[in-house]
Length: 203
View 1 (cartoon, rainbow, N blue to C red):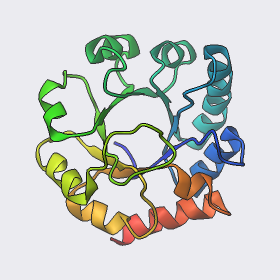
View 2: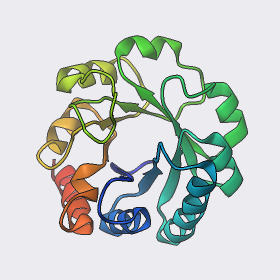
View 3: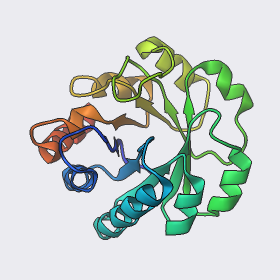
C-alpha cells in the first residue's frame, strides 16, 4: 500500500536534497522520489545512498527516478519511469518482487500500451509546472479524472499541485499526489507536508 503524499526532490530549491527529503518524511510523506536530471551517475548514486540510509529508519520508501542501474545497485524501494525511459518488463524483472514500479502517464492513449508489472501511474501534469521543463501539455482535472476512470491501477496526480487541491484529487479517485514545489520551496517544508496530509485526510 502507498500513502497519499509522495515528495519529489527539487534540485533547484534552496534546501539540500537530503534535508528536503527528511523534512517531507517527518511531515508525513511515505514515499520520496529522488529526481535529478543533470547529476552524473556517480553523484546521483552517492546521494541516493544517503537518502536510503536516512529514510529507511523512518519507514519511508525511496523511489529512484529513471536510473534503473542505481535503483538496483543501492537496493532502493522502487523505480519511477517516464514514457520512453526504458522497457517496463525489463525494469520489473531487474527490480524483483516487493519493489514499487511507477510509470508516468500523460494521456489516456498511453494506457493501451502499458506492460504488466506497473504498480502505480504518475498522471499529469495536471497544471503547468516550472520544476520539469519540457513537460507534456497539462491535462487539467478533467483529463486526470478521465485517465483515473480508465484504469484499475492506482493513479498519483502530479503537476503544479498543492494546498487546496487535495480534496478535488481525492474526489476524482486519485490514490495520492506527487508534490515538488509546494513542499521543497515552502518556508517550513515539514509543516507544509503535514498540512497537505491533513487536507487529504479531511477530504
